[in-house]
Amino acid sequence: MQSFIDIAKRLLPDFLPVLQKRYSILRYIGFLQPVGRRSLAANLGLTERVLRSEVEFLKEQNLITATNAGMSLTQEGKNLLEDLNGVMRELKGLDVLELELKHRLHIHKVIIVPGDVDESSLVKRELGKAAATCMKKLLQGDNIIAVTGGSTMAAVADKLSPKTADRNILFVPARGGVGEDVQNQANTICAIMASNMHAKHRVFYAPDQVSEEIYQSLVKEPEIHENLTLIRSANMVIHGIGDAMTMAERRKSPPDLLAKLGEKRAVGEAFGYYFNEEGEIVHKVLTIGLQLENLAKIPNVLAVAGGASKAKAIKAYMKQAPETTILITDEGAAERLVKG
Image 1 (cartoon, rainbow, N blue to C red):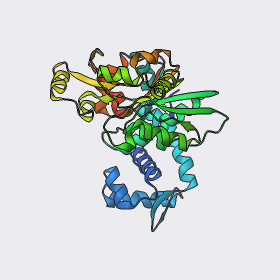
Image 2: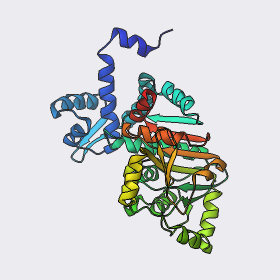
Image 3: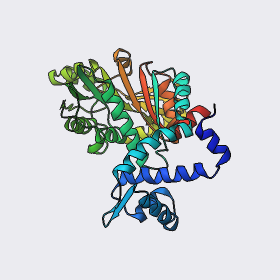
Image 4: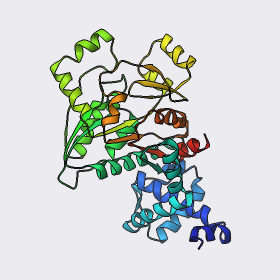
């Protein structure tokens, strides 16, 4: 028997575009509420005239309310949006795409959220929400969770809420700082995650990359040695996947290294390892923290990255990723990965 969506596509061709548009409006209001019409129109790429008629319809259906502060979802609107999420996943074929990518990448699971981070920064919040939900489902008994830095990890931290069951949780930075904004460093993100979940965290005061001589000296320091032991005994890791050149520049890498990465066609980075499109390691930064080889002993590895522009980086890293990996990505990256 054909599904309702298949029937609608044939008999009501105008129905699906309208459904998609109204779903997007409700979804963005949910993200930004309270939000003004001008701001919403800009985020959706619609004219205010087109948006005005849609907003009036949604108000008549008691799905949104409008005040001087802006528009917000009603409880009915929240409930309907929750139901629509499943419908839109079927419509976009995201469940099928998840299974296809899981088999192609040879990993445990793939979770895809609608949209593309490259086109809307709000999709990063969806990635954060999906990763936070997945992480909480995996919690069992005592948990040590190692976390890397970056804006995507910050989005995950923002979506965490207090644990609902009796779980002991300790967040630990997977590595030292990376010369980026303080709010995107692993120490800061661990502190926010712990605060949002009413859990504990450790700080890791160590540089991200060092010389061999300094590395050998630092790892002998009692506090750093203790933190490294905790990191390596983690039962969960949450990390991002970076674009190779972007990460190299963020680390303030010297010109000769940038030239080397360009020459060897590096496309992705994770844990200080740089990969080419074939997944080969073309350069390794000596970092104090979690190493790629440590991942094989960790039961749950969550990799979070989105945007069509990240597809090459994701694909490259996944050739080295352990089979326990759960990839949480967006529609833009997923479609590019399938085509590639």
